[in-house]
Length: 119
Length: 111
Image 1 (tube, rainbow over the protein chains, first blue to last red):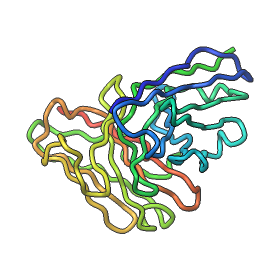
Image 2 (image 1 turned 30 degrees about the horizontal axis):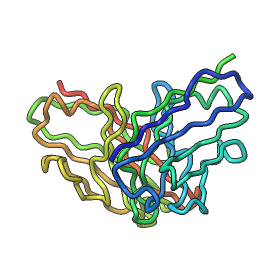
Image 3 (image 1 turned 60 degrees about the horizontal axis):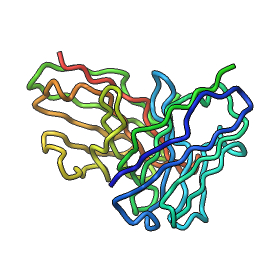
């Protein structure tokens, strides 16, 4: 099982970025997926989750209306479209597989991709 | 401020036992949502350590255990080793927030 994130970088406030997470080693279409972030020197913060089929999406309040989670099961890829980025969105963004059990744990995790929002 | 409260730091000598607490409320742990624990070694991604309150994934040694009671949960590590030095996070689900929540993390130092 492997998750590989990409798409991070340095952007200015108000700009957009799209993160990708390529999955391999498991039946991607059978699992919900999530993004979790970690600001520099801070703890983990759940950002968003999408159901296995892609129809159900959930977001933490601070990103609602700005971020969009999606997936392409044919390409085994998870996405996070981030618009109107703010300085406080600066973090390492991890992609993770959600266990099949409802409202459960995340395992495994990718290595993360760094997003820096700064003017 | 995290929804789940953990002590910022704990420490212990090699061979000793330490516990890390995770305190929630009636909308998360107290609402009977399970608690899960992660270990994050410096500069690496988090790794699942305990799931479903008490269960260890394959490869996690049995000197690591989890428990849950009421609105709190605990992670116990016995026979402390230098390699246990890491940050530890608890995680659950919160019905009021309709989302997944993490504790603020606890830094374990092996003296």
